[in-house]
Length: 135
Length: 135
DNA sequence: CTTTACTGTAATTATTTTTATTACAGAATG
DNA sequence: CATTCTGTAATAAAAATAATTACAGTAAAG
Image (cartoon, rainbow over all chains, first blue to last red; front, side, top):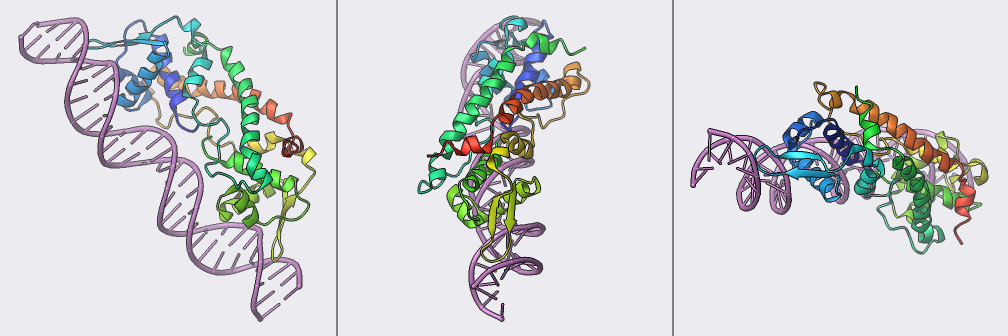
């Protein structure tokens, strides 16, 4: 995961957790220092996940769909996880070689195990506890 | 980590763990289906870490510098870890905003904690146990 | 109603990152 | 001393990521 989807989502959610008003994508983008259209795209993903509600039209914007206490960071991780945690070889290894033939299977097993440990950690943390760090 | 350094290193090390002879970068690259110069670069890194020995010149190549049992997968991970595990925002967030000002600090804290869990898992696995999966 | 200020989304372009290629000096074998 | 490797750097190509632009749709406010 080398892209910045996770940090961007966390930034969006933290802003919403600390605000009682609707926040516009432009305001959020200004805090992140990223593009408003990109932010709206990510908000759209978070909405489909049920973490965020938005209101369209004038004075529209976003807010949390449920209390920050009920949002686990693992939910965010699971949403943005795309590529393998530890990287995947783009090249298909040589099937004529014992190692080449099996490496992807065994790497996937390894990743799954390691990722479980990571997810367990993230399950224990809520957006509330994260947002409370900001003073 | 979206690049494939970790899988490539694991592939190299597994091949070496299963061979008693020196393997050339071209042979290894053929199994991975990657570029020999890239493989030599990674071998060079693994050598600096003390995991691999190489012999230059004709009939040269690489072999493990110590028994596979003594190589922990966490050593490989620590070598290739570059960008943050869960991605870093490229943009410097807005310092005029409370969240923007502190987000990177708090994300780093979070990453550190989560990464520790991951490293603990990898510390328990040796190259030997990984290589033994290949039949 | 009509203007205004938002969201939603897609298409395109720009940028950055990653990987491959090429090249060649240096080393060891035969 | 020719051959076959490694080591390394420079460059080019490809892929992934992010920014920009554009515009239709929606809802509030005048």
